[in-house]
Length: 288
Image (tube, rainbow, N blue to C red; front, side, top):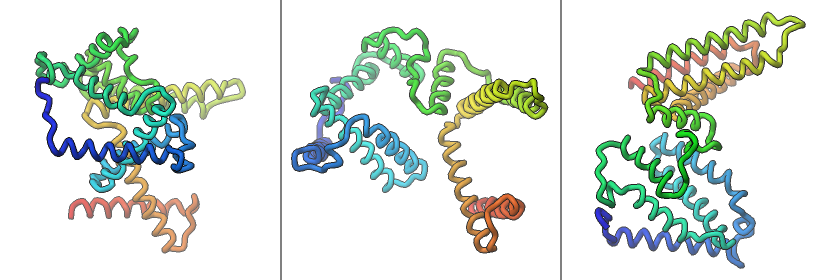
């Protein structure tokens, strides 16, 4: 096959390592195996798959190679365990999973393993969608957006919906348009909040609260769009901010304990001073 790297000692070693892990999983699920492993089902392991994926992402964000190696191994473990559970049920085998993946990778890369020529990543992604729709029997979707999974976390789904629409030309000219949209949506949020503050006995607070939820959703969607438009992944940006908040709040807790002060609203001014201290410390550390 064109451009397929030939088998060598490294690939053979990898194959032997994979075979060893497969046999360990067979043992864990076997008659003399682990009670916990034998009780698991594909359904019971869903959350484990998500948790291990997120722990892998955290290790990648931290550029912690040792932790990354461990967490990616955990993702592989859960994937193989679910696959072997289905092998035991007779639905499909681990070999089916691997063979199907190999066939799909080759089928979706005719520009590598076949005779097609593509010059850009954009062309590759468009071809990828066509192959899924036509060659893989998935049918032509009723919407371009149907290929975005409905069960993704909402931030990821928003990002992917926007990215998919943009690929077909539905996009802002530049980030300035998105900024203006954010300002417009914030004005609408402020309008609803004003009406909530001025409510009287005839006001429908439940309706206004629902309207506020709607408008805040529009703000979040627009902010995610700004991130996409400026080349920032919103998940990564929020992950960094979460870590920053954790560090600074932990500093506040430490300093409040040293000052023998309680963490409550009455001591908010002091907590805010420690927050500013934490910010300044981080800036100084970054400039060293």
